[in-house]
Image (cartoon, rainbow, N blue to C red; front, side, top):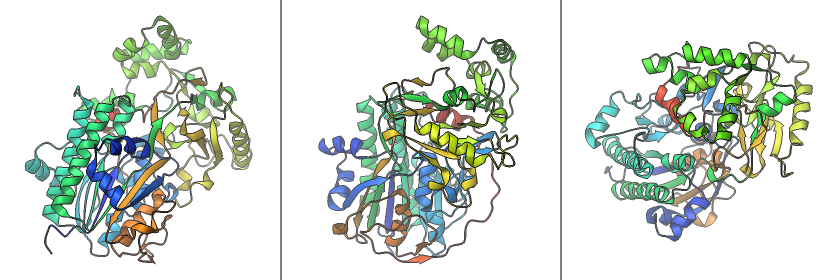
Length: 537
């Protein structure tokens, strides 16, 4: 088959794309190639999952399964009270490209989050988000080949760049160039390329309309060149979630739980390890473990905190003096954290361990290392907390939560035990939930824009009946839609269905991924990047 026609189905992932972001770009003719897919094909909103954040949502998209099956709930994986940044070994279900491999269909996958380290399949893969800057690729040595062919290739933008629009646009260009090179070389029938900067710019500079438009113009340019060069029969554009302003409040859940007697705290103790202690410690010396030996400044700050002079109290004084931002820019993060009031996880009854998980974890005896809630008390404690959380209102008198429910209403599968016990969904995703302790339960949102539940999907091509539409499309529907477009049965354990516009190829029983040994991410650059974007507090 001619290499220009080997690509049958192309999946284009645009992180955080949604009507709110796309419509102004369409109106101003900024992204004509992307707009043509929406105009000539069929499209609609794409409901994301709970939680609608990158590290969990992309595995849900490319496995077609909820986090209770694939096992990734956020940017962190937990072992007791310890954590690490998630990676591909935490994804316990087979990916789209692995399922296609069982049917003799090859794939090229570029920049998809949580795909490092890659497993073997027929094709090529360059990992995306949560991978280190120089990731292992499949096949081995691929990244060196790509860089030899196209020049620089980065997983993350240049941190020293003054112009974020240009830095993220450069990354988008690299994605497109790498994908085209690999598609030429491997002649795949399925391709998957993901663009991340369309999300990250909103976490860093949501008011920078020029940068946002520049990034999208580059994404559109790369999409046009892929379509012109490889002419896929079918194109699917999908996002993992939406993006929009947070006009409500920041609710610090652990502050509330402390006041209600569920959270125990300690001044200057270890608490939950933070990205900062790892970043400022051994990782800077090239060590890959998460142990940390505090220096003199940290020990002094911890001692002061033990007498009540915590980072929070110092910060309040600095804020009143109007110099808090200046001091924060120069204070080592490890020192700040050493002096902070922190959640004492082993001594707490219930707590938020990561805000991205959208929920509360009970410290359960027999499951958690120092559990204090007995199995007999579990349901009563959980019900008491659910009832209390449902009644919380903002200082304006509005409900904080749209829903507060047991985890089993959202997650089902063999990995459900790793989920939070109580899922807390903020009202209209207009309130920012935080795990930090600030001595006040409410404040302004730490980020003016953040994730929304409604993303977008558009399809065009020979496999699709454009008149049938996309129906009530859900994130879980993308994988079975891709497989059906390639006339491949989808996994009967998937939680989604093919979109109405594509004829189903039926279902098949695929074996669940065998147990794989988890490996540590423990990478300074990854953790710093996630923290800079507000994913790690």
